[in-house]
Length: 272
Length: 278
Image 1 (cartoon, chains in turn blue, red):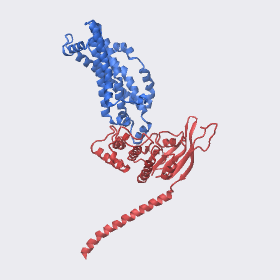
Image 2: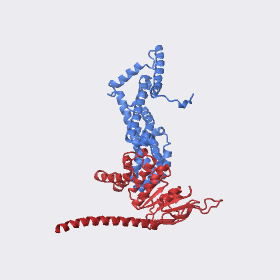
Image 3: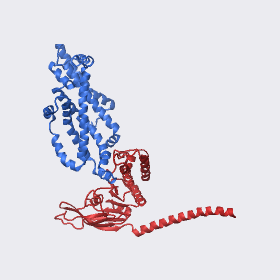
Image 4: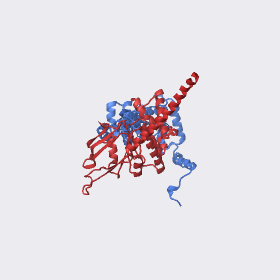
C-alpha cells in the first residue's frame, strides 16, 4: 500500500475522471427535474432539457418584436462588447501604470501606497457615484469594470516589475540602455505573460461587474436578460444563460492561455 | 589604457562600517582578483566599481576621472546568476548592447545595420563556443553556457573594465576549468582590465595577475560592526615585468616572422625581372 499521493491516473483514466463531475452534475439535475416534472408537468423551478432547448431556439432564432433583434445574440454582443472594452482599457492602464510606478523609484514612492488604498475601495459601493457622474449608459458600466479590475492588474504588474532581478537591470545599464530602452526591451516583454495571466484571473471579476451593472440598468445584455426573466421565474432561460456565460468565460480563458504560450515561448521554457 | 584608483574609500550603512581605508591603484591590463571570507564586503567593493553603490567617503577614479554616478557601458559585468535576459535568444542577448547603442528609440535595428550587428554577435558567439546554440533561449542552456553567453554579451560592448562577481561559483569543476581557460584568453585578446570577486583561492592565483585579500584587521568583540574590512594583503601573482617581457618577446618574434616572409616575397618579386634582364 503506497501513500495516496503516489497514485497517479493514466492519461485515458484522467480524461474520464475530468468529465465525470460534469456528467454527474447534469445527471443529478436530470433526475431531480424528471422527479419534479412527474408530479407537476408545468414545474418552473427545474425545467427539463427540452424546455431549455425550446427557449434557446426561441431567443436565438426568432426576431424579438420589441427590440427587432435576435435576443440571445444581441445580449451576447452587448455583454461581450462591455467586457472587452472594460478588460482592454484595464489591461492598458494596468500595464502603463504598473510599469511606470514599478520601475521609477520616485513614482513608486508617490503612488504605491495610494494604489494599495485605492484598490481596496469596493467598486460596487461606488456604482451609484458612477451612475450619477457618467449617466446610466454604456460609459458607467465600462468605468465600473475598469474601476474594479485596473487596480488589481496594476498592482500585479507592479509586483512583477519589482520581482525582476536587480542584476538584469544593472546588466542592461552596463550595456548602455536608457530608461526607455529598458522599459521596452527588458521590462515590457517580461511583464506581458504576467499581464495575460492577470487578465485571465480578472475574467471572473469582469463578468461579475458586467452582470451587476446590467442588472441595475441596461437595454440588453446577458445579465440584463437573466434579471429581467427572473420576474417570471423563467429558469428555462436563466440556467442556459448561466451555462452560456460560463462557456464564453472558459473560451476566453483558453484563448488567452494559448495566446500567452504562442507569443511568449520563452516563458513556458523557463517555467518547465 | 585604463587605470583604476581607490582613494581612501569607506562604505558605511548607518552605524555599520563595511569597508574602511581602501586604497588601491590598478594599472592598465591587470587581472585583479578580490578574495576574502564571505560577508566581508568583497561584493560591496565590486558594486562600488559598478556604481551600483556609492562610497560613503573617499572616491574612486577611472583613468583619473571620478567614476560615473550610475552603471555605464565602459564597465561590463557578469554576475553569478541572472546576467542574461530570459526573453531573448542567445543571439538576441548578444545583440542587445549594440542595438541599444544604435537605435535609441526602438532598441531594434533593421536591414543592413541589423545584419552587420548580427555578424559581429555571431563572431563573438563563435569565440565563446556558443555559435550552434544561437537560436536557443538562455533557459535551455547549461549554467556554464549561460555564463559564456553573459561574457559574450558584455564583451561585445568592448568595456574598459570587466567586473566578474563570483562568475564560476555555481559551476561544476570541469566547466569551471573551461571557463578559466576562456576568461584568461579573452583577457589577453581584449587587453582590458578585469576585476573578479571569488572565494576560491586556486582560481584566484590561476587567473589573477594581482590578488588582494579583504578582511577585518581589527575586531571589537563588544561592537563587531565598529571596524570595517580593508585590503589586508596585496600580492602580485604574475610579475608585470615578466608579463611585459613575454609580450615583448612574442611581438618581436611575430615582427621577425613577418619581416622574413615579406623579404621572401620581395626577393622573389625582385629576382624575376633580374633574370629577364640577364
